[in-house]
Image (tube, rainbow, N blue to C red; front, side):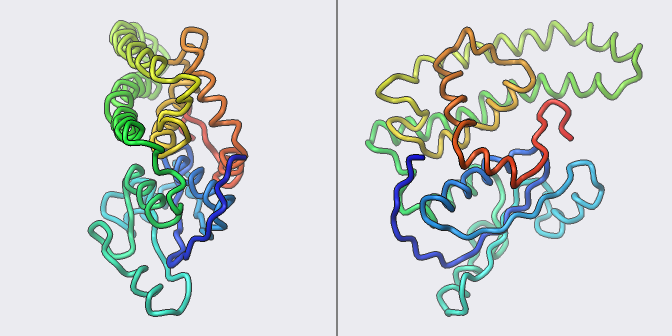
Length: 257
């Protein structure tokens, strides 16, 4: 494991509200990486996706009741720690939402620069692939998911008909995905094996969820994009990623259980 031992003065303890089979997984993976490299302490509360109580729990923390949500508690009784936990980082004191912004917070406050890109070129690359993963790629993947999920909720006969009707549309969006995988493939090299560049960074955490979805749902053909496949293999093979899977429970992006 390529950790970067460095002291971090932890002022807050994050609690991650992790809904099963959700994008909260990449935040949990990040926390596991930080726990290994900087001994960051954190808590996780796992919430079953299909339990009606989950929406109520998340809604009590933030009106947009979606996972991930992170709450911050003081690490100690010191005034500095108390103030840090009650600071308004977004719009609600001590509450963080949106996975990209949560990951940025983790980097800023817990990583001691571990995920800061190695050069100005890599900084621009890191920003690009963070946005690419959350917007361009995720959008095309979500279109396919939406059509497949609509059909899956229907009775068998209607489901089959809808899948026949939706199939050309799904194939269209999958073709768009292939163009994006081509961009990703071309960006990964021996010198820059990570989407953040020379070393793993925020872009890799942000890219992990859409690629996890694409792999589990069969949208991604690793034979056509071997460098992307290698990147994904490095990600899921990391000890911290595997610990996050164990700590977070269900991570089924095909059935979304």
